[in-house]
Amino acid sequence: MTSINQNKAQKSTLKRPYCDVCARPQKTCICHCVTPVSNQTPIHIIQHPDETKQAKGTAKLASLCLSSSTLSVLSESKSVALSEVMHVLFPAPNANELSENDREEITAQGGLHILDGTWRQANQLIRLLESRSIDIVFHTLSTIDYQSRYRQLRKTKKQGAFSTIEAIYLALSVLDSADVAEPLIESFNQFLEFQNQFQPNREQN
Ligand SMILES: [Zn+2]
View 1 (tube, rainbow, N blue to C red):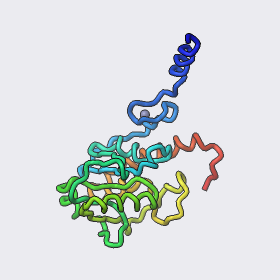
View 2 (cartoon, helix red, strand yellow; view 1 turned 90 degrees about the vertical axis):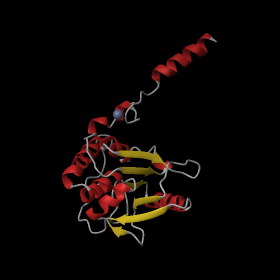
View 3 (spheres, rainbow, N blue to C red; view 1 turned 120 degrees about the vertical axis):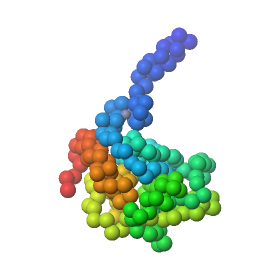
């Protein structure tokens, strides 16, 4: 019995320590990449359950940067507080180009929702929201001239694919101002540099 207890004690001291703030193992803690953003338009990140353990994901980083934000996981079994009308950044066929004129309405109706996941996962999240009788107002950022750095981070074949933090940066650049949103890109750059330390053989392009 004593040896079992000793093993247990050893295991608990060997357990990987996690950061209380970003919830990552302390070795890969991203808190030093956080740059504060005082956003006026509230941002709500809706995360696909498969994204929660994704080390290259930027949703947690974005939520730590923003002064007004929430981060929730949505799945069939997990319900989150959802409003009757939701403004969602997603290029649905009936989406309107996001403009600064939308700010008042979006803010009055709770804020802008950003989906965190691959295209397939984002589509799943949309279907889940639609199944809950929510009135969704879709917004898109199709005319923005911005070269994503997302490809450095994760392989994606879809043109115009942004990481979650970049999507929030672009949306807040339109709704609040470029100055307000800019620290998100500083954070993203620091995050990319930090991630690259763990991928020494990554192909440079
Ligand atoms: Zn941390």
